[in-house]
Image (cartoon, rainbow, N blue to C red; front, side, top):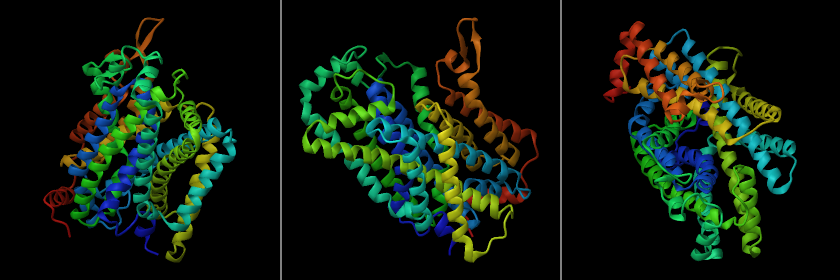
Length: 484
């Protein structure tokens, strides 16, 4: 069995390359979060997704080619920890251990939170037992990927992309035609919208208030977390020539704009469609109400209601399977094989990967069951910690020649620690009202955390020895497209 084909994917077409990463990004953020946030806060939240579009365009234009070239030169690069090892010539594997531990732990926590949230959603909609449904989903994903291989993610990318977009567009058209523009605006005005309906729908407003510069910074930086998604970045290791990246980039840009626009429209329509229900800050309740309203509009509405829930489940599954791909690849290739923990026989390689896949899925299920408090903010916090650790580190490693392995470790650790520090460490204010630095400055913790990570990478790299000449020469070769 060819390890690269099974664990990562091989011979991926250009459009598949573009859709794999894009569908992963839009699944949770676009199909689930965007409509809910637009419903709750107004169209101003779309600036966060403008940040995602900017970030995706930047990654595909300035990071994808160099990541591909490193993978072509070092055939063993299947994941970010492997890339860090070869980029900085870390023969002692310290960097690989730090990166592997951080990415695996954070990703598994995010997977656990996601699968728990899916159980809560299905309970709110159908009253299904969360323990049974989450176990069934985890087991089913592990069984499918274990038997078919992770390259099935590429083979099914087109179907997933078409299905998600089609469901959102059809539901939006159906809901709009059911109400009509007059009833839609009337219902929105009756929903206690802060300010006028035009304010709510204006992209310069967020939660009924005019956006100020700090809001733009916060919202756009939240979108830039996308550049720190390990799955998105590791996809480029499967590309074997720049033409596929060029095709994938074009597909990504077109699909991303269309999908986010459709999801935002659905969120706006849901504000009036869910009337007379009052606004809710609970994602599961929002989805349950949307399903209920659809199901009350004839046979077509019932069918669309079930399609809507199927879309939600698929979006969660896409996020889970992409994250599972990252964790399994790192554990098998960077920890077991690189660490020589187990003597691997090539004839049993597939069996090892299947076993790891099931073990990781069950661990995520158990961790999710142990979590009693779940919120979207908690999930976003962990995604923020991972993004702020990975995004600046990868970017600087590709764009700054002087960066060394010590700066890389500093970036990974500081980015991780900075998010909870800036978000929860309340040192300012009086004894009655304590504020964190993020609250005091009016920006979210992501902007400050990324800045800290960049500064720590630069500072630590400058006060520690320069990279070896061999590492510098390889960096120059990759930069100038000289790849053996």
